[in-house]
Length: 166
Image 1 (cartoon, rainbow, N blue to C red):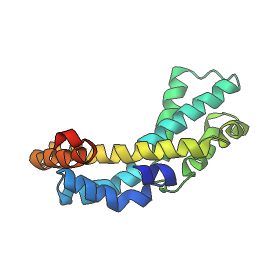
Image 2: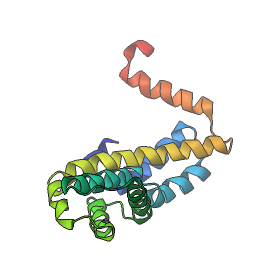
Image 3: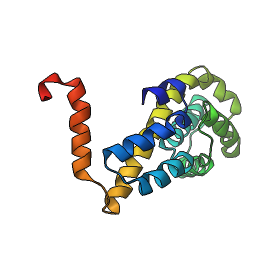
Image 4: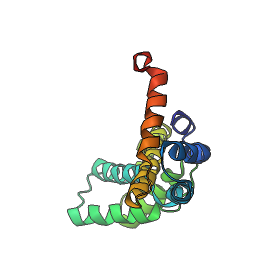
């Protein structure tokens, strides 16, 4: 998680997240499919950031978006954020392409450009957590999650930090 946060790149942790999910009790057949697919289609942090940033810029310019316009904006951003690369700053480019289509001034991006790198680190971490959660949900849904392996993993990991657990 620290690597994903500091590099703002979800691609850098792809092998490690697969390894960790398998160690936690998700089978390799599910993990090796869900994690790479999630990196293309499960970008929760990016979608959330883009939606909030777009509404922030609209409010900054005094543009009152109706509930329907906000829903259309969020749905548009959900679709446009699918398939974006796991490289730093790409959400900013998607936001740039989307704002013009809904009538929000592109100049407003200048207000968030300075803090985008910091926000990129947080949304990358959220994307990684979302992908890990997707693995666990699907493994449990398919009744292939190994709860005993997960508990052993938790004991092992938490035992390293908590000397009283030993």
